[in-house]
Amino acid sequence: MQYINQQDLFNTARSRKYQAILYDLRSKIEFDKFRLIKSWNLDVNSINKDLSLVKQSQSASKEFLKVVYGWQKVENRGEVNVYLIWDKNTETPLKDIYSIFSNCIAPSRIFALDVDFDTFKQKYSVICSSSADAKQKGKTLCRFPNEIIPNLFLGGYNDADEMMVILQELKITHVLNCAREFTSGIPNDEKQEYKIPNGVVVNHIKMIDQPRQQIKDRSWKGSNPIIKNIRPISLASSK
Image (cartoon, rainbow, N blue to C red):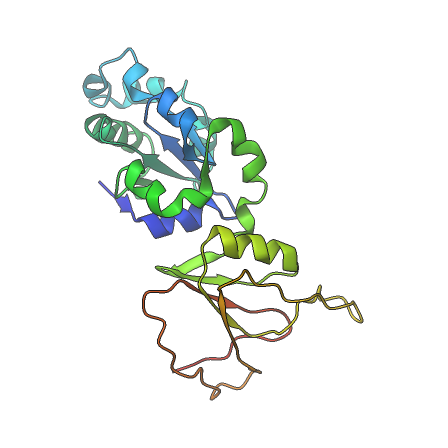
């Protein structure tokens, strides 16, 4: 079985280029209470079929998947991957579902989360919600920055108020800022004030495209920093 780690699933789930289908195998009740926003429910415990028998046949697997929401997109578009989310109650059927998908598409396109959902939501609750709130919250999901290494986010924003909200939701403690003000990128457009939540430490660095320009060594042990960059200034290489 092929796994995806929590950080990579976070980046995948909030990407604008959403070439992924996320299936949550938990019960619909648990799913509706709290779920990864862009996931779809595939309640394995409510399926009236013996999955251990279905997985033994490609034809049976295809017949099973025909009624699974989103399967047609997976089948017709080779760039779309499948991600499986599970909990301790669905750990056993997870293997059967994985095998069923493997019978119908390349196994390299199928990933299971490497931890159960309860573990995932403890760290990444920011991209989770109840089903009732998922549509509204999903509108801003793609605005969250990528996490390039654990607790280090790479962000760039043209809206100061939007940045303020994101810093709060991600519980950012430190910002490494390459631009003192926000700009829309439009010539002669008025710059916006740089807003930071109370208690967040900001380190401003003046950097232009000079490969030898270095970031001074700073000790941020135990903190969650974000590197902010904005056009036309780009982050130069550092050693």
